[in-house]
Image (cartoon, rainbow, N blue to C red; front, side, top):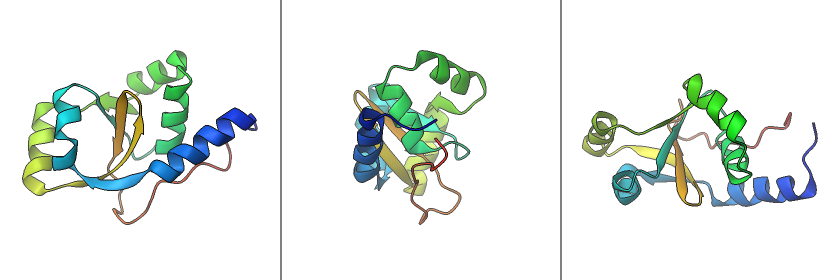
Amino acid sequence: MADTPEQAQRRADFLAQTAQIEFAELQRYFAAGRLILVSDDLDLIEVAVQLSQDNAAQFEQWMNTGGVEGVGDERATRWLADNRSLWAVVADPWVLVQQRKSAATPPEASDSE
């Protein structure tokens, strides 16, 4: 299914705003409960687009299958100790983060969506 012009613009905006950032710089979002971990199996940009469109059904499905989840204390402590760098994008008020198998590989918008 092709994107509407609005979806295409959101996708482009999120892609342009996506960057690698050290977890230490994300601690305030973690402390506020606004950090969401996106599975490496999912397209970070697609998750941001769906969240921005309030697609609750899709988000619930991802939550039920482990595609998205909150960041727990143990993981946050480990990321801080490791000085972990994550891919991140803001889907206000949330910050979506993703650990890529190859940290140098940026997330890309899916051509098939």
